[in-house]
Image (cartoon, rainbow, N blue to C red; front, side):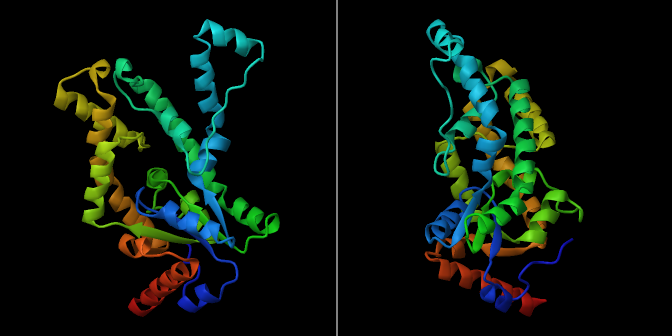
Length: 292
């Protein structure tokens, strides 16, 4: 396992080229901090979800639009004649095209995908996420060499824990990230978990899962509800799975934290400026030094 970059408070605060990766459950402040730092003009913001949705999943997303459009005689004629262009308008602030493409499994009449199609799209996302994470060193170089940003922040998706093995010292993704950045786990409390579950229950969204976890939960859900795939309410399934996914992910995040440092979500929520962020990271490194 790589040693932690910026191993002391002084090393972090004095660095002219700070490089950091934020990871943890979605909704705990990763994008908030990344956006705040980007808007300061001193930080390059590399969004893993945006990279996935544009570079690695963009063609899949747009092909799904075209497939539906071809079912309409009116749009089919225009598409075949190159009279219209169909594309997604994904952005840092609007990842809906990626989310909608991933979809939810269940009844077609309720907007669901077949479980096989759902698994296919999950597998596509898994590959895309690994590739986007491995692109991080290249974007660190680009951010400085081309754009002249002194500092770099990588905003990872909540599903990073599904594509790495923190117990493997040679895990390619974690080894690359730890070598090139300071990895920071934003750790939530039980209260945060409860709030995230309530938020998700009001607005259930597509998620990415490890295939073993997904297969086991799908079979469990069908048995508990005594139903067939075509009878599954897609929103009901993802609601039921979400809380179990958080419990599944937390131990993995905790293991990943050994590759970097841990900051409490409550402290992250209080950060309003780059100076406050730098101070928080510095004090965390100082505490780590004193406790070791």
